[in-house]
Length: 192
Image (cartoon, rainbow, N blue to C red):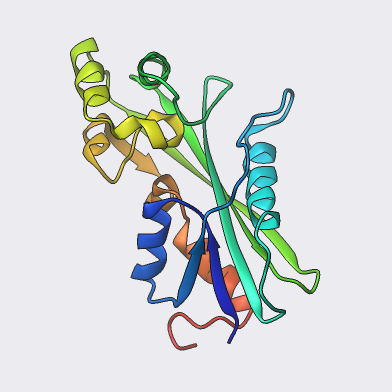
């Protein structure tokens, strides 16, 4: 069985992989997560997922990297992680009362030239938020390490009225898609 390496600093991705019962090590990629002009949200997520995978040196040919990147697309704007309260406020105000797309690209890569990238898209619907709710949510500190400035698995769940698609994609790792990708590489999750 391949040795799995998760190229991520995300505690949410670590927890999701642990929930699958996978044995892996975690190495944080050292990359700039910049958005390029003219790039679509899917292109951005896929490029950054591959860039994260490329930044990790595999110890041997028996290793397989799992890397992922999540972006939020709302009204034609790609939303990354807010760097300030002002950016979080702007993002949450934009998302209020609207739907948006959460796109997570997953990359599997090894030392033998194999590289597969797939993307998952989930539509998320936000309630209409008051300025007080936005400020209260920002005060929790939760928005700052999450694409779009919210975490559906935390307090941010109260901002969401419903979703269409994979919940785990919104958390940061589409598990069903990853499962199918790993099966093609003979990585067992369910013993099959």
